[in-house]
Length: 350
Picture 1 (cartoon, rainbow, N blue to C red):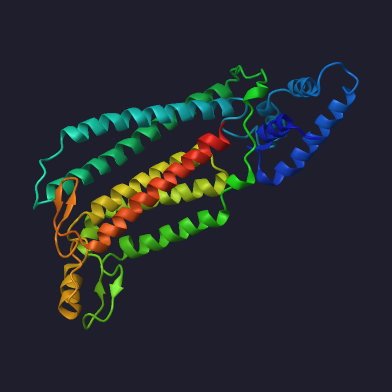
Picture 2: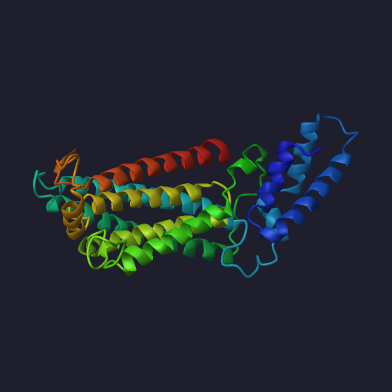
């Protein structure tokens, strides 16, 4: 009977192999381990001790995976260097992103403009500038860190520098992800389709975006095209993060640290974009607002036409639909971040 430790060992060997090879190699390893255990059936010791003895004899899972991989010789960084490379790269990227974000956040807060009740433009400019500066700085810093770590490990691998990973630490083998934590392919594909449609509507065709028919002799776009043009860089960054998150989810298939960080970046960018975009009192096309009030007598600006209390004084007649949409986006994004964090740190990664 396959024990949890054996399952974790086989998973550690096969998780980085091509998907089409995993099932066959898993079966071969299972049979090999069962055969080795059978040879030790009369040996002294408990069943767990025999399992640990067999797995220790088989060696490091990453080294064993290298023997099964046919493409190992031609890759830029092979095993066992690749596994160490991933761990180091993860630590370096987190450290760089965290330190840079903290520094930029302090600088951003210090440069905050004085809040006003009527003019939100300085505040919106401050938020937009800070967000764009953070995105540019983080992208540049992470790209540089990735390049240097990759170059260093590629040199170590090509020069044959030995990695001290021979010891098998059975207690630290990764847990086998349960099927309940599998990420459906349809979810990732749906995110990609949504991102493409969103890009076409709000980035490629801002002058049309969501056309409202029946209020005039021509279709009136719901959102103000000028505002969409002003926030286009944030929209592009948010869509790019959404696409990257969807691709990582599709490739990983389970909740991993890579999935968590891509989800975190995607949702944070989505919240920032929504605040900057929907926080603009002119986000809804003024022509649409005027025509709607003339024809139906409806005022969509604020609650009962009054400005809304907000973080920076008062929103200047923030349209009610955008206020509701903003709240929904923030709440849904936070829930998704928390859910992904729970599945990543409390279930997948023990």
